[in-house]
Image 1 (tube, rainbow, N blue to C red):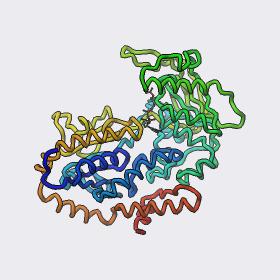
Image 2: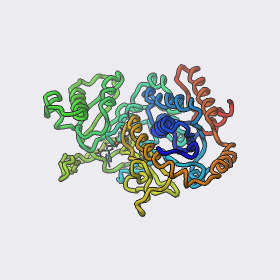
Image 3: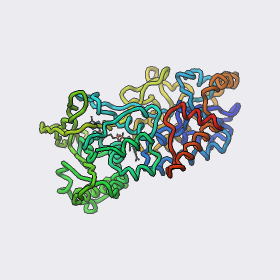
Image 4: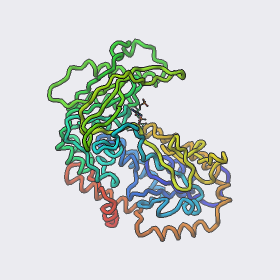
Length: 463
Ligand code: NAP
């Protein structure tokens, strides 16, 4: 990096794992930099707080670890309860900083585009995830748990997360930080079976091996493999040469599925049915979901070598009162910024946001995480992704500073004064954190989350 004229001021919009990795990298590589971290909610964490499932508490800790690391520098400043686009415009934010990094993730959902998709009883999985994790936007949802069978469409890790949450024993859930309203509802759930539909075969499923392995160790759940005709006839893993780690993970996954397929059902257990080569065709019901019509697929390899699902014409009706659509997330456009509607991301080169019409970088605007590369990868994938963006930003920094108005600091002080009444700073967040943990302690739980912004703001005021 060339010499800087003054300590850099960088804004990061979003506070999930990608944002924290970017902040940590910036603070380390630019030792005089100050970073302002914004979240529209009073609490930081993004998907680490509201996406990771409650029984995977260890994965949430990444945020706590990074939080203490970067906050201890005194150069990271949290601004919760500030909505960029409403409370401050993008242009204003950029005028107060040398650069802005967007880390807003993908909050929208892909749709199935089939009849009945919007019937009551059919929901995007993201609503269910937000609901059981106590996200203020989703706390008010209601799910029909008065049904023996639920169906989850999709074969990714989110599909396995929501299926597990529907089936785990309430006593197990009660030891997690699951939202109280979700715990109460799941205690009375009638769901005995969750069918997870994959349109392609076992070799093409998107969920990862550790998540599949975990299912086999849950005493209250039987994993049942359905409609995987080639699984048992294909050669077992170990007899096939494995060339790299990816191949190895894939072989391990198939081996596990084979092992599950051979397990004898145990009486009295709830069932998680992994049903392959099956596509949803229509949701049916009078006023609410009562059934899902599905079609069987055969697998064909297209000209590019990709295995595709092709309908056989065989159809079947699954009775169910709850369908969760878990077929991927989708990012949305932000006012004043370019957007790639096909990918649902900010168009970018190595994290520099690009204006596609002019083929040029938008000065001072960067992106990390799912908003940069689409909704894929695990929490750790965001580390390299953030480092790549920070490298580009640091290269650009001298010229960005040269172009920045000298009244930048005054402008920022004016904005801060305007934001102060609703803004929750780091002390405020720590007060929320302490209050949630104290509520949890009283119930033998890690924490009890506040599920409304008002309750969070009240707790934040108790500093
Ligand atoms: P995903 O991994 O992209 O999986 C989406 C699934 O939906 C795929 O199986 C896909 O099948 C299927 N699908 C798409 N369109 C469909 C349609 N029209 N009909 C039927 N099926 C359809 O997405 P995700 O599960 O939302 O996860 C997002 C990212 O978060 C992933 O990288 C995931 O690993 C990560 N994540 C990780 C964890 C964890 O580490 N425990 C937990 C949650 C999420 P095709 O393959 O046939 O397209």
